[in-house]
Every structure is written in C-alpha cells, then in structure tokens.
Length: 83
Image 1 (cartoon, helix red, strand yellow):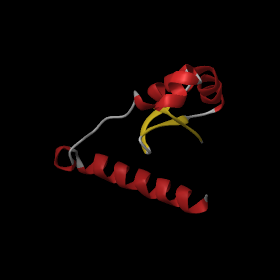
Image 2 (cartoon, one colour):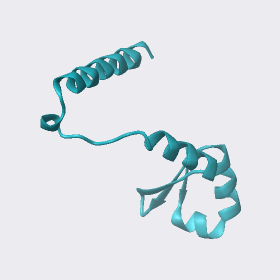
Image 3 (cartoon, helix red, strand yellow):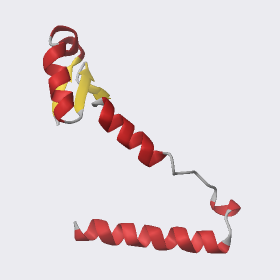
C-alpha cells in the first residue's frame, strides 16, 4: 500500500489520486496513519457488502441463530487457517 503525507496530498494530488485508483492509499499526518483513500468503485463495493450485516447482542438471539453464528465463525477461522 502506498503512503503519502497530508502535505503530499496538498502538493501532489494527481499522483495520490492515481495511486488510489490502483489500490488503497494511506495518508499520514505527523507520522501517524490518519486516513485511507480509496477509489469510489472500491468504496461502493465495500458499502454494498456491508449493507447485509447487522450487530446483535448475544443475549438477544435465539439458540438457532447462536448456532448459525458459531458455525459461520468456525468456517471463517478454517478459511483463514488455509490461507
């Protein structure tokens, strides 16, 4: 991932924008990662994937939902181990 400073963004915006079209770009301020710049199509893709998600409290779900979440987490963990 390319990294630019806020000063770079102000003075080299074209280069920063081109880099963002190729992938996410870190923007730092005083050495600290402050922003991540991504292309609009990447943002739209992330947002569309997130729209089906929801947050729940463990105590508010049924036993069947808890079992489904547990299986999904186990599958995700196995997938990560295989990577």
